[in-house]
Length: 495
Image (cartoon, rainbow, N blue to C red):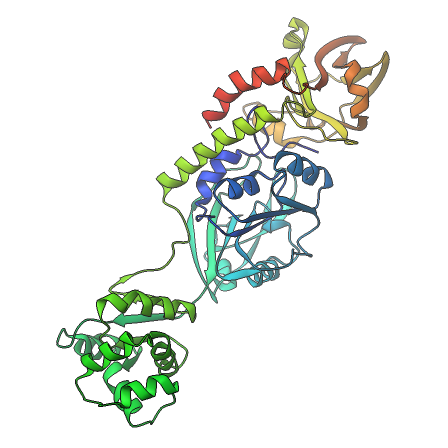
């Protein structure tokens, strides 16, 4: 499996720490988190680090899930597709770099929203196609061709929700579209609370502002009067307090109602008067009871707005996000050091003047140095090589294990490499696009003896790298892990 997420000492295809900063995730304190397409669990680990009560990840790759469980044993991971979501509601759901793989992208978003808690946030990291229309745009990428929504189509899909494009995410190599971060929440009705004392202009404001905007207005004074005449239903306790010695001095009526602990009963009446949608409440509430009233509206599914809009933020500030990501990076370094006894690949490039002379460049995509390898896991060797002479043919690569040599052709198409490395060349032979190699079926138990990887040019072998397994012992980290804790840690902090 190609290394996708990045960890201390392990460079994957995705800049995971930079992506974490860009996602602007909300606080996880006491919340349930679900990562759909979790890979090796980077974001589940962050959720637990930030105080999540539970972090769950799902991924179709059993290898990725196996590695994730090794890295983050206090999280739960399942090898399954998004067609089968875990039970229960989640406060935060993340779908990063994956929406375009869904057969029905809108349906997937709706299913994820159905799994959100009432105040939950769905975080999407996705490409948005440039178009002035509401449409799906077919985009050719370096590895495939996929459909991406225009901004208008995204707005159409999310019409029933509260959503915001937070900003850019990290650009992914080989992807021609910029990636964006989008936060989505359930749309809740607002209740505009005008709670000041009598004579402060509440009624005038409602008459001149909310009535013109066609927002329903609930009058506290009128509600008290109707309750005193038993014209509207209410709890027996509330009706009794209001009816006893009723007077049209409504501030005194309010003092009496709230002093008896009947805020919830009164809010229930106001909500029925509001009709279930947005409304403005024109009613005096003593200052010491205002928070109780706001809480009661919140419990009933409203967003209470008192002059300024007060609601739980769906994102952290950019400075706070960066600080938390940095602290998480430090915790991952500690975690990596504590996992010194876990088997990991050791990849060492061979210094060879012949390689430098013959090839303009070559790369081992997988495995990468420090990549975890779990029990019974097979592995794949893949990468690419471009000769300096663009017209040369017949280059092959080989692996040697226990004295047995296997030879492979460079026959995997890698247009992404050719475009990146040879973009200034006027004419590139079509055959050069097949500069990639990939061979699987290699086993972990074969590596302790060491494996040699190299190229064969004109019958001459050119060793390029040596692969093995770094396996520490309890209480005594291996030399490679000591190196990772030093140089690797410094490189990780720079992300």
